[in-house]
Image (cartoon, rainbow, N blue to C red; front, side):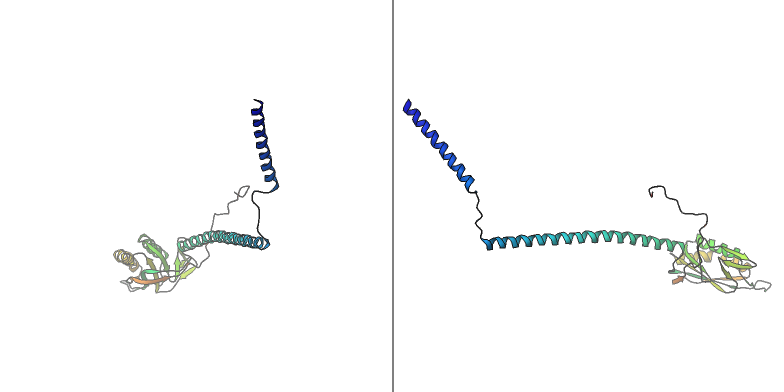
Amino acid sequence: MGKQMNISFSIILIVIGFMLAVQFQTIKEPVVRDTRDMWELRDDLKKSQELHSELINEIYKYEQLIEQYNTERVDSKETVLRETLDELKAEAGLTEVNGSGIVLTVDRAFNDLGVPADSVSADILRRLINDLNSFQAEAISIDGHRVINTTVIREIQRITKIDSYSINSLPFDIKVISNDAEKLYNRLKASEAVDEFFVENLKLSISKPHDEITIPAFDDPIRVMHMEPVKSDKGGK
């Protein structure tokens, strides 16, 4: 019994000694040792620096792309605003217009008494413009002057004026642009416009549709009345 106990005790001491030896060796030397020489270390350092440089270049490239994208977004907004402004100007008659249409010529005529007219009245011009608008005219000019929604046709001291321009000589042309010039021509021919002008000793001639007609932009100053800037609330809202 005593002999068996001594053997067991000896085995335990051997195991403990082996464990201590392993632990001491582990503390003394690292598991993985760097066995590279100076040139290998320099080569690895160079590769690391090259990788770092590539990463910096990639970051710069993507920053440039982001800046370009933001610039394009701003430019896109400006383009949309410009296009909208151009559309509004065109609708307001502030730009020159080209398209298919017809040309009306107002000239003197003689009634049964043989008395020619010296001028055209504002009333008959207004009626003609109303007819043209009802016939879907897109743009109109009278004697080279653009007619827009705010145009005023009136008589001042027996002189017919279109806004600030006087119509005091005959003949003169009325140019009309339409999306369907042929339809406009047929509707005018079937209307009473020619007879109404003849009653006032005037001859209204209607040309065949033209493929290309130019109508100038409205060149009078536009007066905006009864409007004022909206005052913003606090905080810029």
